[in-house]
Amino acid sequence: MNNHDSMETDEIDLSRPSAARVYDYYLGGAHNFAVDREMAQQAIRMWPDLPLIMQANRAFLRRAVRHCVAAGVRQFLDLGSGIPTAGNVHEVARAADPGARVVYVDRDPIAVTYSRSILGDDRQTAVVKADLCRPDLVLTRPEVTSLLDFDQPIAVMMVAVLHFVPDSEDLAGIIAGYRDAVAPGSFLVVSHATEAGQPEKAEEHQELYRRTATPMTMRSQEQVAALFDGFDLIDPGVVYLPLWRPESLDEVDEHPERFTGLAAVGRKP
Image (cartoon, rainbow, N blue to C red; front, side):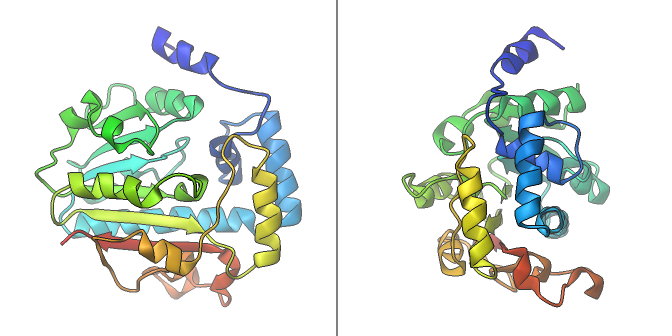
């Protein structure tokens, strides 16, 4: 580990669970600590479907990336990218086009440290420690400007992260900062937790996340749709995770509402 990574590891707070590390545990990852596992296990006892919901979210991410590549996009800005697990954006994109380039952005120091360790000297990827709520700072980072060509379409990924942005932030303004920076033909990819489907469990889940440094704010289908101002929503619009362009009927549950996650992709005209 280099000195830069050591510095960031020193920033890790092991006294409170981290949303990124809890998510890693749900997906079967190894980059989590006892405090994260305790919270995740408590959440699963309350809501046994949680690991399935997280897996459905990752499956949506993979389908959305493949859709963007098929539409001609070769650049990805993954905001709130979290801790690396199998099926990351660059892996999925390069399976379709080996020339795809990806910048990962996260404010969690352990997510950044592990990302840098895994990606190593891969010149088609970069990792930035930054807060997605500051598009002015993210978009001017040299790692971003040197790897991404803003005259060409970019897929802006905001997958399972916007529900950690509270209502006190100007969420519409944040997304507009990225929308205005990217070229026509760019995409916005969003998945977002919602109370719809299982409101009684959703409230318990939000209460649990208030223990972390990133409390959760669930939003409705209408609120998620409003985030796509300035984008044309791609069919089927804002839907439950398994319903966004499933690749087989096996991916569609008889009760998709139990996944309590909304998914959507929009294209900048």
